[in-house]
Image 1 (cartoon, rainbow, N blue to C red):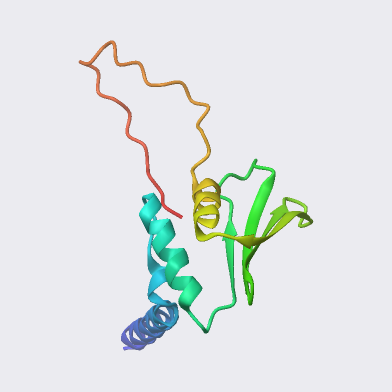
Image 2: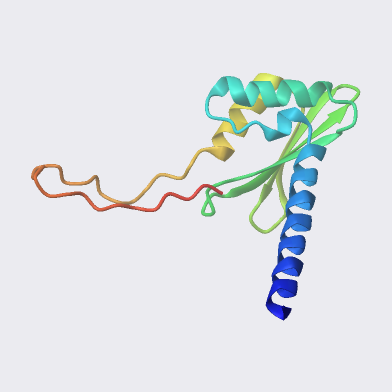
Length: 139
């Protein structure tokens, strides 16, 4: 009997956690839930964000931990967009006012591009041997 009560409490806690996570996702606007894969996706995200009156800024983190530029912040103003690029130490590297959506899209794509791998290409000379399997993780 105590086992069933403990199981019911764990199930209820898991369900509450699930609801909290899914509710957080629904709070995000539709454009923030797009996973960009091509240039048009980046442009679409920025286009919808630019017309969203409830959002004034966007923060884009660099996927390459070794890059000099750590993140980009885009701010809306009466005159257009302001792009600020920050370094690893948190200091601003440069700021550009009156930026176009095209420039923002190109920089967005550059920051979200996966860093180049230092691994040599796999040797495919002996096709009879099975290749190793690697785990793929998306973050």
